[in-house]
Length: 319
Image 1 (cartoon, rainbow, N blue to C red):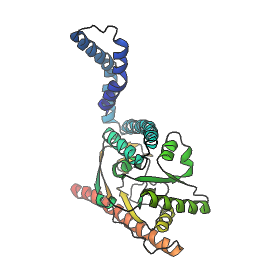
Image 2 (image 1 turned 120 degrees about the horizontal axis):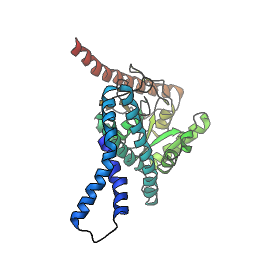
Image 3 (image 1 turned 135 degrees about the horizontal axis):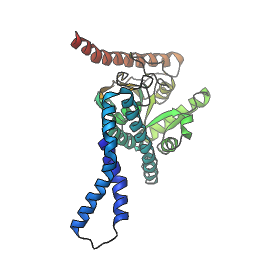
Image 4 (image 1 turned 45 degrees about the vertical axis):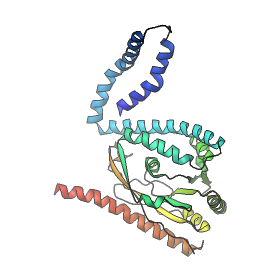
């Protein structure tokens, strides 16, 4: 990871600066230019060498250091991506093509952040994301690291539904506003239902999908579990008669634990489940509760299956 950041800063910041400020003569020979480039590279890398060895040793010896190191890289990448997201959103909005902004930003973040933190995400059931009709996507929510799994699976022509408070977050709020995010006031039920009706009409007229964290808040525990589901996604799906596509991110507490200060490398599985049908359902309490129970029970069973598949196999190897 250190070499990736070193190379990134070397190519994008330091070397262009030195080349621009250090080129005092345009008639210098090619050999002189080559020596100058080597000198610039050396002058940049040499001061980093005394720092590199302690970082490598600490990274191997201290799990707490690995946590802060990887978490710092993750947050830095997230911050840089937020700036890039706003610029891309402005450009695509001016070009009249803002339906897939979040897809491109999410993919950019995944392909840059994934190798930096050392996570590889394998997707099962990806064919369920390929649909000609708008759908409501729901996923489980473990921590802020979930943005990485969204980056891996986020389809084109998809936006997110989020709590209204996020609209005023610097960079993130502006990006979400420019990329068709739907903001909901969860404290005001009447306003929320009106928002769902507008969102359903928007999805139909623009052939857009909406992604929602069904639990509404995070749960990162050692055993696979999910909090009770918020009903917003299901009201939205029923109002538009959209299929609900559940997405399950494997429990990753063994790799990431914010409280225990653990952030390790590894491979994880994301499973996209077959859609839950809403045709013929209404916004009645009974129908919404049945849909919530069907989706949640399938997602929890999948979460437990993935957990057992990984940790059960590990236990057998130890026996």
